[in-house]
Image (tube, rainbow, N blue to C red; front, side, top):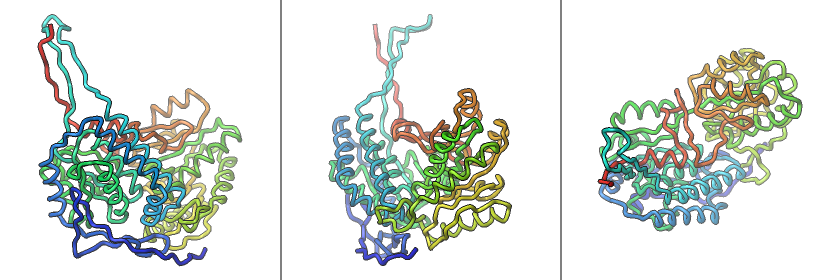
Length: 485
């Protein structure tokens, strides 16, 4: 496929520190993965910029009422909806995903702000009567939630709007001040979101967005003394670095995944077709760049010969190419280096005995949907997190205990999907899979933006994200008691 020339006006976006536009002489280039064109620049901020943002956050005590917070969140949601085309363009230019996928990203962020706006008017305080035992008293104990001093939010490239929304919206809902450091690969969307929130009425002291190279600004985002909590979504090595350096600070770490879609042998042809739909969509949406993407398809042996051709047929239907073309299903991955790595893992798996059934050819960062059958379960392609639109099929025994053991055999434990019509087997897999989420007849990544989400093992430290859980982790619970005759 040839790549047409794209004329793009390069935009420079300063940092937003408490609403002020802050620049530096040194800049970071943001490139469009489709053709490696520079589409924007941001400041190469340093530790002192983050330090200033945290100092402002710590000195400011938000006084927004629940109604005022709701109004800001819902106004931001309405702005996202009304400007979805413009925002989607920015996401596609930064990340290279198709317009179909970037519009979906804006829709998800709309959901986050809408749900956070609904939840911020809910008071989950509790009341405990004290006259419950022979030693009780005529009193009541009450609980209330209070905001933290400052929250550090570090976000990844693969969801440059939605991952920022998942950290910022719950912070606003709980009257918190937050400093966001988006990845240097896709920072412009986060800066655009900050402007939307300021325009919606958010006091600027409550949100800063700083940009910079991790080596220059990263440790300040972890160790600044005003930080009460670090919320991070990204790679396992960086998550473990944060855990090692943040020390006594609270940490919510949402790390990588190696999520299976498990196909059991009780399925009819119609069921297998439905499972194939899930497999291909789950592996390729967002160019496969989701921590909850289908990274392994574990198909029990007795149905594999019927299932694999269905997967192949669906993969061949996908249109891949120019991300800005509305007919494109699959755009690029984040850059050519990543695409080359994932392709090399495919070729390595073939050297270990896997069959490459479909590989129409890589071009730069454009990695097509690649179908690989009979992948050994010890291959790096399925043992590591392969963050691209690869569709690897691992044939597993017609034995549920063995299938569960294989599924649990990687270092990750984020999400999973299981396709079966047997209720007893559903329960067996729900109980047996060592993951944060088990979805029956859905892709591993299915959730609503309000439901709890997170992983165990190398996928996270057990704390959950999602609007409700984030709001809980972003607050301190205070108890007080009163005489109560």
